[in-house]
Image (cartoon, rainbow, N blue to C red):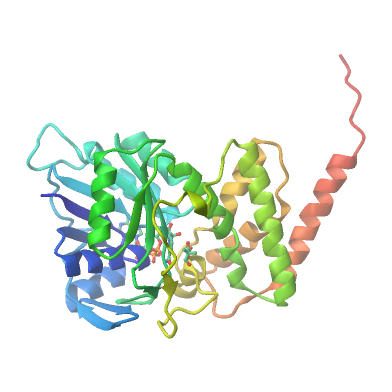
Length: 347
Ligand SMILES: NC(=O)C1=CN([C@@H]2O[C@H](COP(=O)(O)OP(=O)(O)OC[C@H]3O[C@@H](n4cnc5c(N)ncnc54)[C@H](OP(=O)(O)O)[C@@H]3O)[C@@H](O)[C@H]2O)C=CC1
Ligand SMILES: CC(C)(CO)C(=O)C(=O)O
């Protein structure tokens, strides 16, 4: 029987474990630090629109993970900046009931926002599935996870990376469906990840305090810059009309404990954890550099968020004026570079 090894016990991972527990699907949740210690000792406090439950989970610390079996599927639910370490720790672990195999032969599903993790996983794992997850989930307090999706937890789109779909993807879709997710398979997962990044590059704005209209204008500039760069890099974007499942009745429940302005990036800064911005806005900056396109807005956002993360997150929102000023600097610098007369070629 398939067992899901969920690596990362935060908003996405702990809620998956809770849903599997409630649905009778076999799983093991592997986490680290005070979060997993709390879950092992006291269970997870899991808040959903229908109520809050204290749920005992099959939980393991990374220091004492479960032995692997040939039917296991790994679900990677750490943030992008922690993916490389997690992949290297897991890839060469033995499979107890198949001595000729290591974990690198087992299917692995990457739930991260951004575009970087699937290729990183494919370097070590032969069977990589990308998952794009839309879920209003929050982890800001040790041992507590809140998910406001109503009636289902989330919408998940899954496909084999780099492309295609198969029986494993279909099985994942079916089991997520049994566990109260709206799930669908796609043969073009990168199109869904690229489309989601157009949204997630604005996550960073939740770290800043400033006039709403200026923040909205900055958000539009981030998205436009992202669309230009991703298109130049050969990405295309899935559109909502391509969904094979209906989201018509799905919503974020009122009074569910989920507030606007508290998406995953804000949650990391609030907890003083490390930042995923280098893989969201930073992905745009990287692709811009590779394709000779200036990215002043994403670069400024990445830089200020990076400095704040280095200081251990924040206790108060950052001044938006600083972000605007830095972006304007990079913008005028890039205008200067591009308007400078080209130097004469000298043979
Ligand atoms: N939160 C949300 O609502 C949504 C998140 N996403 C995406 O899903 C992905 C997961 O995000 P999210 O659940 O919010 O992340 P969280 O930060 O809430 O949880 C990740 C957890 O994994 C732990 N971790 C890090 N490295 C390891 C490791 N090697 N082994 C075991 N555990 C580890 C972290 O510990 P520590 O705290 O010590 O770092 C943390 O507890 C991200 O890419 C995010 O962008 C997508 C949609 C919605
Ligand atoms: C789905 C969404 C937008 C949830 O808020 C997300 O991706 C995030 O928090 O990073």
